[in-house]
Image (cartoon, one colour):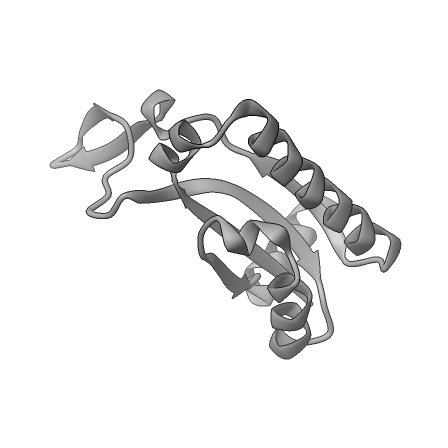
Length: 126
């Protein structure tokens, strides 16, 4: 099964740590991603630029509205995604609980929608 792991963080935290501390944390995350790769669990992932560089699109009454940044009521914003292959949710939790990024902010783990995945695969094969 595929799982999408959404990593959240408080961007102001990065202002409180040194460049060296940030690099050490990133190296720990990269090293654990390598562990996931070797185990066949890491499908892909992306770090996201600052939420300050984001735009949000909405349609209201057929009109497009573009606003700067995400719409969020919390300090934590989406910092990146990781695509994970695991046999079930329990294994996904076990694998991600060891990820150093969990120390920075929460990870939301969601199963990929297999029905939609099959529709996409069928569409691509025709």
